[in-house]
Image 1 (cartoon, one colour):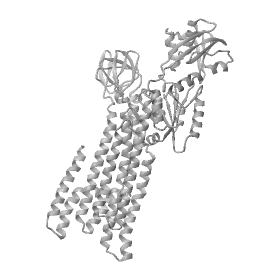
Image 2 (cartoon, rainbow, N blue to C red; image 1 turned 135 degrees about the vertical axis):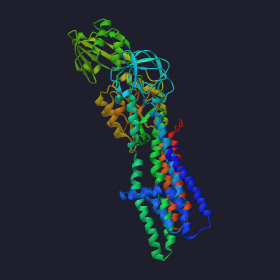
Image 3 (cartoon, one colour; image 1 turned 90 degrees about the vertical axis):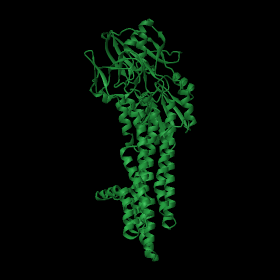
Image 4 (cartoon, one colour; image 1 turned 90 degrees about the horizontal axis):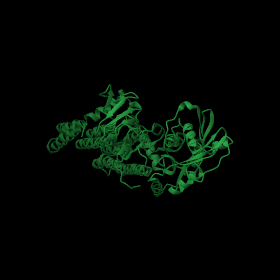
Length: 618
């Protein structure tokens, strides 16, 4: 409990004690007013001050105004105990709301523990403890056992295990050694690591994640926007209704003015919209916090709401459903030797960062002499055109060979085929194979169990590879040999075919899927550890490589939206009933207090359930 919360609690306890004393004292008239004013002002002076300050700034209709109007009115009609009770319970409700919001924020703040406090910068053989934002790209840092990795980089020396639980939600540590990439926010295990920095702190993984989480609350869901608009018009309307209730019936019927004014004051207490204004945003905030504990970063309540309405899930293949770790499994030369074919392929692909290109270079295993390469041009969706030792080399897919008018032949082996042509003559091909992720098939089964109507795979791979992978995973549809523009076209078709008010999700690796990620109703980046493009382009970021986390995200989203709907229906139903009873003179101030504070507390307790994830609950 914070210092401010403790102060409010002490004021509540002292006011409650003074109220009990006032009830027991046998006083009347002005003395009775004074003994009740003491606990009333002690507990409510700041509410009255806020209401007056807001009125001075033109912000009349808010919770403080309603409480001030209702309690001052009760004092004016001689209902002193009711005035104190309403203010007292209102502050109890506020204290509970503050505690609930604080707990929710602490859940989010647990993720903030990934922020590094310092970096051990190596300079002239000595270590200096500096702020992470003071380290430049290319600098060398040392991470000791038990310390947090402060910046993204590459391991130069040492081997260890990294605890990535704060980023991915996974308890299994990740082994790293010289040459491996490491990202900020992880905790070093038992080994000493010397790391060359590759990103400044502002561009590091930890900074991007913290910015994402801190800004998540600014993107409101439709339910939150509705409640904001609703309360903007609702409060003035109920104040007007209360005024009419206090004035019109006694004028028409000649009834007791004090009695009708009392009913109007009860009406005001009941009408306070804090149960909705607090619980709905708190539910989405809790859902985002609960998702972050699972290594799922949702950029706002609007995206959580979209996840809950998922109907079609479209996947990229490489790096999403497969590991994206390629190996050269077949080398079929034609006209030249096996070693020459691999050599030309490695030289043609030497500047590419694509996983297939890396696998070819690894299979070649010899340092590439870049002076032999006169030029390299990447042909998007086709392959590479290079000038090597004065020879014109084309390396790429079937379409590249056809585009250049080169006669080629397919391979009976399943995998990604890279064809080579030298000076217009077909030189052979290599086959590179990928491996399906262990939980990919289970992810598709779980999505189907959640009622997802269609799972689709889009890939630029050959038809045989795409069909084989889709069959192994049990997917509904697969589209192969797609260029980046073709993927967008397929996405447009799927968007046209989906059910109204349902959402289409696209899941990609975030590296080359930005156009499709942004076109989908909701973009999810897979395997996003250290991938800047994923964090920027996607609406939801999964901080590990597990496709099953998509089903987890949908379950959390559906549970959160279900809690929001429960709170809205419950709060409006109770308030509507008590408002009607207040208008006809059946309910008293105790029912009004329950309809305000009691409903708020129950709604907030329900909203806090969103902070936890209950396994398979859909």
